[in-house]
Every structure is written in structure tokens, then in C-alpha cells.
Image (tube, rainbow, N blue to C red; front, side, top):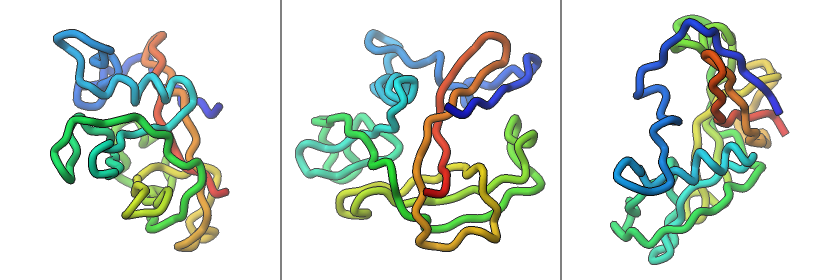
Length: 160
């Protein structure tokens, strides 16, 4: 599993670090705890409406199509298709500036838009000039270490 190590001195604002806010139930539960737990288990998942079949990404607690809360968790297909991309060299957001230059991509997984999702993510281990729209990509879970002894999980894309 790829690991990104963060410096010990960065204190992330709550908006950028929702991991600790995720509770499985109770007053502080957001309803998307399983998204983070599934990432920790190595799976990129999202919510699908049991009533209309709409797959939403990012995960939701109410369907964006029919407003139902009758949702289930589904795994996103591991391989998708590159839809758009650019290279970030300067002005990368906090923490990611140490990784620049890197590719920011949009990829489609599944039968988008009818039965799939369109997701943005960072791509590693590839150069801008080596990419083409339509290339096959794969998502991979990333372990984020730090600051301190904290550990979180996110995802990135790699060329398939």
C-alpha cells in the first residue's frame, strides 16, 4: 500500500481532516462512517439508492436523484477510464505541495452516468505526456501518516 507521510507540525483544520469526526452512530454520526472504515479496509465505496438505483459520489445520506434515504454501500469498480487530467506544478494545496508536480485527474468507473461514478483524484507514478483521454486507470487506497501518530486513508489513481 502506498504511504504518504505528513510532517508532525501541521495542524489540519476540521474541514480538511474529517476522519476523527466519523462515528458509526450516536449524536455525532454523519452517516458516512462506512466510507472511511471501508477505505481503512482497502475498499473504495460509495452509496447507491435502493429505490431509484442512482450511485452517488461522494457518499450521501439522502439520494440526490429521488431524495430517498434507502441507501446501500457499494464497491466502486477497481478499473475505470480517464476522462480529464492536468498537471499541478505550482500552487498545490497545503500538504500536497510536497508531492508536486502531480497529476489531478477525473476518471469514470462503471457505466457512467447510468450505473457508475465520476471521481476526481491524484495520479502517481505517471507523467502528463504519457496520459491520454480514455486510458485505463485503477484506484488504490493510500495510507496517510501524520501529523504525529495519526493514520488516515484516502485514494489515488494509477495507470492500469
